[in-house]
Image 1: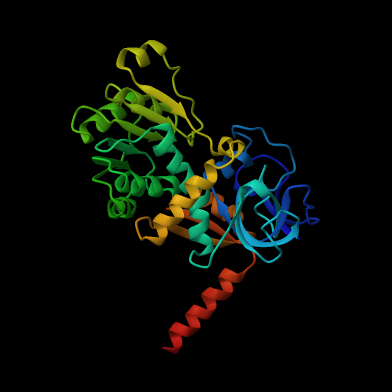
Image 2: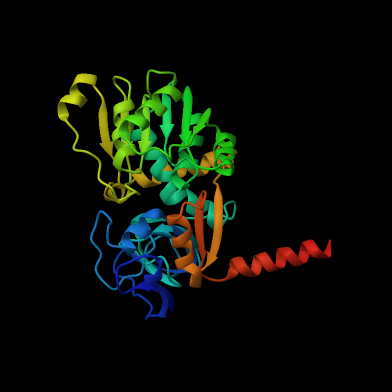
Length: 346
């Protein structure tokens, strides 16, 4: 099978397409023939070995796939079943991958591959950040950092649907700002030019009416984390789910948390897999919201499997919005060509 394998740590250049043996499912696992795979910012951290969990070489990246069951003996998933699944330890950037039966979900034809992938890692992360980590309450003022990204586009829409009083989003560039506003943000600010925590604190508090936000969803790290924590109003909650800058924030003084009664919480989606039902509950509500038209997954670019390195280049350079997808099977290309011919015929 064709797969993107990483044999040395580094940037996008270390992603190389190669031929590998098909993986074999074990007890409680399924073999999935992959149609599409999701690309996440965390994948770039894995490539350079700066992720939360250290990587062992060589490995195939990719944590989420859409495809068909072609092997394994997990009940309720006969051969040919279309599924959305999370992998364990990577393997998604390949024509076939093994997934645990506990993180596989039947997929109807009412969702495209890209829409389904947008709900898996990005959607369920946003769901848990707001529902469980930050405990969003009606009327809360919410700051969503990197709001044009995969998690951000989901979080803005969910915060709006769940009664946030004011949503302040950070995004760079006019196109991204327009997108985030269309999703429900009340104000969009660009903090890319800030260099200190005090600057971030001032900008966020001003955007939130002076008092500061009740909730901040943060994934940048460094001075953005420091400023966001300082900007919280008393009893506010900061939920951190990434450190895209790879710059560690300043040590947090417990006394500061106590004095202002603020909450600092972290979230990492793989932990959800250890508690049966948590992933399923989030995914089911998200799918219902999509069917009802309340939630609209934002889909960015789709890349051929052979161009996985370009996908990493684009996401690292902040040129992307929403969900990025690898078209592993080539069906997406075939569909695009067919649609183009149909359009030209009209």
